[in-house]
Structure formats: C-alpha cells, structure tokens
Length: 98
Image (cartoon, rainbow, N blue to C red; front, side, top):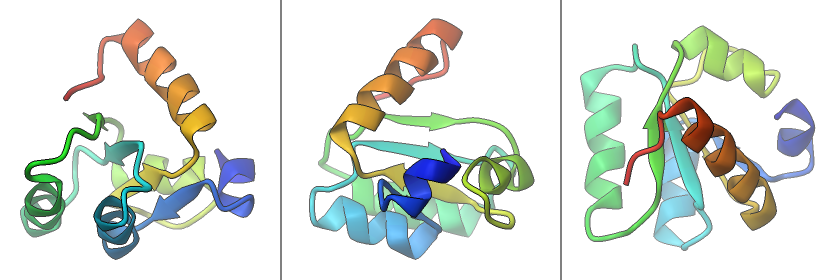
C-alpha cells in the first residue's frame, strides 16, 4: 500500500477520501475502527447514495502505517485494479461491506 500511495493510487485522510468520493474516484474506502465519530459521519454523509465498498479495519496507527504515513482515520483506494485486489483480500477475511 505504501507503493500505491507514492503512485497516487490512494487518497489518505478524511478530506482526501471525501474528495475522491465526490469525483467518483474512490473504489474502496477503508476506515480505522478507532476513528472519531465525527470523521466517520463526514465520510458516511459523503457516501450517501453512492455504492462504494467500505471496510472498518485496524486502528488509526495501523492504517497510516500501511501507506507509510502517521495515523489515519480513513483512506480511499483510487486505482480500480488495486481496489479489486483489496476487495478480494477483504472478501477472504470477511470484512468488506457495501
């Protein structure tokens, strides 16, 4: 995922995720289980009426570390091919939603 971030295939952080959702570039949204309620509500409002798969996994530190950053509440995968791989992994682990 760190390479994907450097290649521009992820949108890290709540505002970047919301922006990717608005322009139709969010193919999967990953949210930390310990993200604040207000951050989650912002993302959920932006997702309203859209069919973007999402999953809650890990904590903020783990999610950030996965893409080589500090703690993150959420990130969006903005590459269709990477999103397919992420969804396949999530399906195997039983954590995908929506």
